[in-house]
Amino acid sequence: MLGSKSPVEDQIPILIKLIDARDNLSVQVHPDDDYAKTYENDLGKTEMWYVLEAEEGAQLVYGFKKDLSKEEFKIAIEENTLSDLLNYVDVHKGDVFFITPGTMHAIGKGIVIAEIQESSNVTYRVYDYGRVGADGKQRELHIDKALEVTKLQKAEEDNYPYVMEMLEGVSIGTLATCPYFTVKRISLEKEINIVADTTSFQDLLIVDGSVEITENDKVWTGKKGDSFFVPAGTGNYTIKGQGELILATL
Image (cartoon, rainbow, N blue to C red):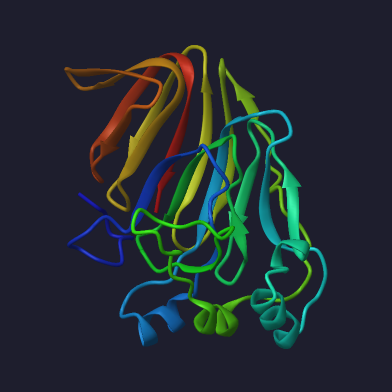
């Protein structure tokens, strides 16, 4: 089902999420695979965000607005001035952000994203706006580990550029490609034929409109918010309708 590219056989190697940020989410960082395997017995996390909705003026955090030393980073955390150093980016529907391990990041209020990531739960929380949980205590921060893995250079780029190409009523663009996943955006007005070969499964996330998926004599209908898992080796199938999809593979 997972395909020959899958690094494991007993779990899906990527996670696909919809995140609706009603408030500013915590500022955090993820380690790379080597660090996570050594200290967490887990994978690191490379991820990408595709912005589905964004309120006017919405922003997210992507890295720092200037180079920092480790000592400056530590002092900013201790003195609660980290927010002054963060790189805030205006967000619009359709934007893509590719987040490598070590990149400080946070989703801001009023943003809905589709997130595709390595299948890992290793997150080091650095700043949480002083909020407290249901128990009345502030949530745990992971300062020492964040100091070890965070990239302290100024953010060089944030919004990840991509191009949509039109072909016979279907517009396709590659949103991200890396050793862990490839993600494409498909804007559909007619019908598209797709092949799921033996190298990888495919995941179809419908982010707008409604579509009909046909494989041999089997037919499924889906609408915005639905997700379909296509096993490796399925072969030819078609998608028709009017809508927009995110296609994720290994």
